[in-house]
Amino acid sequence: MIQEHKGSAVSDTREMSSDSKEMVMNSALYREFLAEREEILRHKWIESEKQGYDIGFERALLDWIVKYRSNWRKARKESRS
Image 1 (spheres, rainbow, N blue to C red):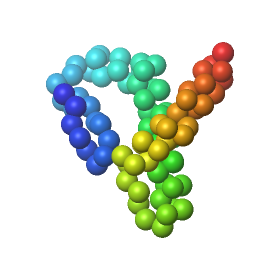
Image 2: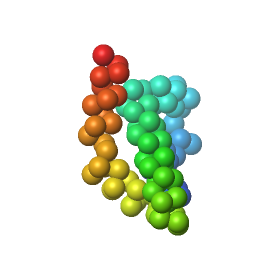
Image 3: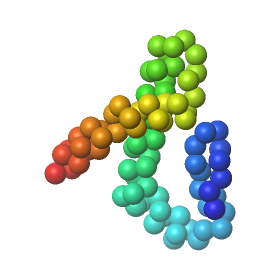
Image 4: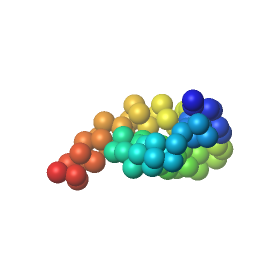
């Protein structure tokens, strides 16, 4: 079950066993999600500072995807090689 919480998706882990939680938290996919989310939040902060007001997560997300996601993913892939 996914719940909306302050502009970001947060897993409802109450129904998951501790083994399942640990597996999810240690998965490569989850780590990539967290790294990408961190970059989006950084972008949100930078762009909000430039604009002088909070641009919001959705706007930052869409802007970051269009402008930076592809190169960010390439750079992460190269750094792991």
